[in-house]
Image 1 (cartoon, rainbow, N blue to C red):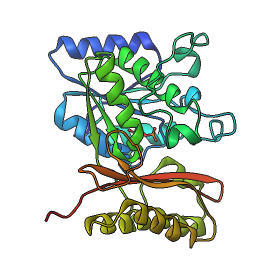
Image 2: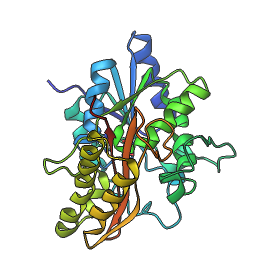
Image 3: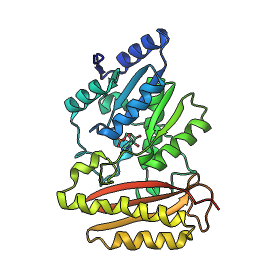
Image 4: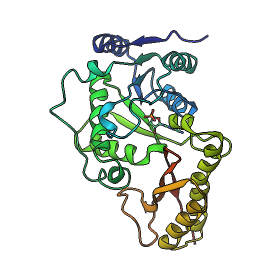
Length: 287
Ligand code: AMP
């Protein structure tokens, strides 16, 4: 039997429902999203359901994390469809506030996480991570979850949130869940709906490139050579414009010059007008 789903817009109602669940002894899980849900989001819900008793999924297209020339206005907002998906996935409560509920006045306070917010995504999207850290902390303060679930798909984001939670003593356990992919390897993303059929084929170049990087690193190829191979593969596709394609330390996100124990390959590229990101953790073959 599907559980009843409650969807609320107001902060007061959210707080009341969560308080009731907590008073009933339930552990609260939170899955922050911008909506336009896909199986990747639902895998976070599954993880939340395994670990917590009352799952709150938030849907909020957060204006402060979009740059002036980004897709804030055209970002898809299929609310009814999202609610249906949440219902079948066993979400207990959807919080989908209006911008005015969350930002009744311009914020005077922001959260900056300088240790990882200047490189890669941060370099190409100035102000993005300040918007992300601020909204995530606001959502944590609104929902007061015991645990929150994020995707590895946004590798830098989950790292940033872990830093913020540790540095500010936020009492939330942060979990990172694996990236869900379509059968052909394309990482699921709400932005994939922008891709034409031809662009979608071209977009496979990202996951293919990560695979090449992973195999090269396994064979202990030097990172500089791996980076060159990644760029070469991506550039062989007409219609791909690289923002970055690199191998970095998995904790600091600094580009590595030699093999270190924990590495990650990260790509951001535009396919047509759609900007896509993807990444893969890299392991070196023992011996
Ligand atoms: P978004 O709605 O794009 O802000 O994403 C909300 C959450 O879902 C973030 O924690 C993302 O990392 C996560 N997510 C997005 N795409 C995927 C995916 N393909 N697999 C797993 N998690 C994902």
